Length: 367
Image 1 (cartoon, rainbow, N blue to C red):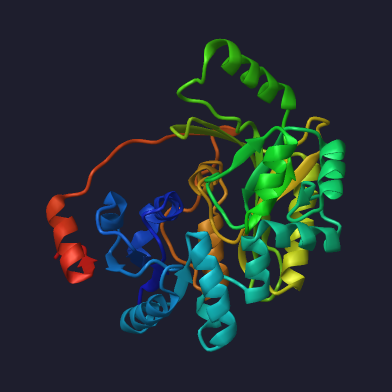
Image 2: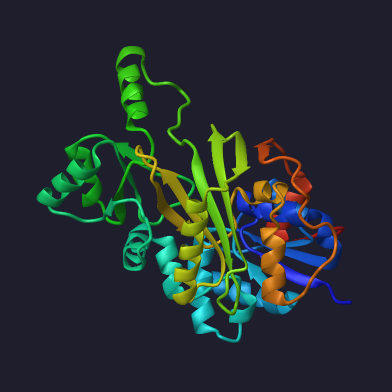
């Protein structure tokens, strides 16, 4: 029987590594093809074959030509994105090429834009009555003052299109607030968490100095839904996650009915707007304990392998739902506890593989 042929984009990311980890014991029924814009990431050599591609956002036309060539050459059954830029590109391709759409793990371009842009996400949630963190993207001095009065300092400043908490700032005064909104493509949100922790940190800086390592990322609620090609919602998975200095991660199943309700309502709203495939809803509680959404992702996430360890086979479910093929091997392990712990470890790539990959633009296992 012909193996199911998957093309996974941007596999050097943690998301790509998570996808592979959940499929590792089932790859006998799969041909796992990958893409990467870099040649020296160790994880790219874990796949059956990997192709060098241009960075998705930097040169979308060249990326499209390369992608279409790989899909035809490798007879790909399903393309799985692992980065936000991949989502924006694939959802646009989904609309332009209806002949390819069934083989893309994504939905419409309009829904993809909402997922990728935090201000569009805020407007989307307002239209659908979903609890998104209070947000502002442009404002007069009076509107800024009213937003700060209602939500208080600190506030969170972040790019409308960003990921992995990059370029995210805590702002604590009107001048910072004004300068943030004067920048193109930025948004300010209510700080979700206990602001007393930020105040204590600032007092500590005044008395002791700036700690070399620090983070304000507390307990987060991560909700992972799947929207099938027919618009139905096969599952909604809720977990609580905590990262420690990006070196380890603790995840537990979240049985809070509020989280499940938010996930279900979000999935239904995005389904109605044409989204298909994975939908990740990132939430956190404010100082009053209210659970609020602060961003969406249209893909699997860095916690995918943790959900797998907790017994949720989100990757396998998506592949089977979109291809109609049930493949063998180990399914998600039955959870032995309600918690999963992940520690990040260092590794390196064989320089000979890196050199060959960079030279040839493609690398295949066993050659």
